[in-house]
Image 1: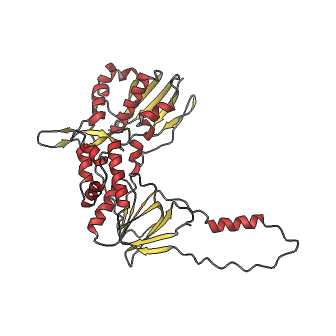
Image 2 (image 1 turned 120 degrees about the vertical axis):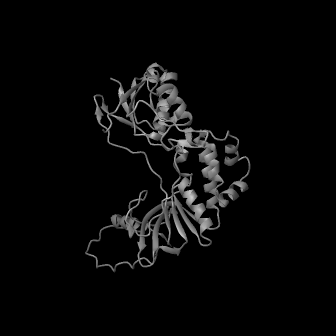
Image 3 (image 1 turned 180 degrees about the horizontal axis):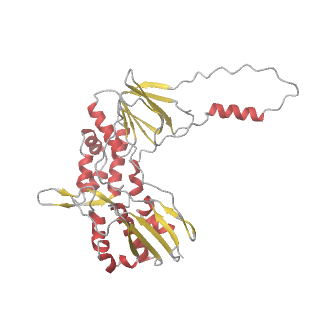
Length: 372
């Protein structure tokens, strides 16, 4: 029996939907833990003291009690700022840009682990859900953004998008490059204080309505909470991750999980399956991303991995498609397929077409029960 691999449940990371900002509500009394934070760890001073104690030679006679060391005089650096933004993806970029134009003075503290424009750099090979016009509208939406784009040497990410046909979808690397351009420009802004690192804690003083945010920089020499910023506004923009669940064991052993990022990247997908071995991959879902994973697996099986088979678990044999009518109304927005995913689904997967299409030679559809 061929080994079984499962693509985790597919959600859409490919540019669909609006880029929402989540502003931390003032009525929250405290945040004891936050996504993306790191566990507390010993400081360099405590590690050094432990090392010294473990390597000291034992004394032949009992030593007199030592005077405890004086407490460290090092305190977190506390500064009052105008706002704090956590996250460097499209929502975080939009939050920083909007705050710069809304708040006339003061620093905007910006925290992210990489400042690569969020997770979009993982999906550079993915066809987008949003159109070229949507991305350009985002890049021109704020005066701060327009200044960054105008100052960038040409050609750049904006001119590359402008060269594409308007109104159609594009590969995500075009959008990822634009977000990176804006991110780099904002980090150089005189009123932005960027930190490559993570948030360790955040709490709100009910009397002053001020948030205290602890920051752990990705810099050697900083201890836990070496940096503390205080601000009346915290904007938390960490995005989302694909849903994961525990996997059962098959007759041949443990089931291997393939990440959604790998399933959406043809170049990475081709490297994880031996071309001459029989493998079965399970794909669960009927979303935009699920269709693109099915497309990538089908192309891989048809071209080089001829013993690869796909079992597709979906609640419906048919799809919804996003269409723009003459009156400008977008039907099935954020739920219907469009672009490359729509073309592949309509030609190869939809309804009875799967049984007669080229994809049907490799993909078997399994309809899931639906709630009454």
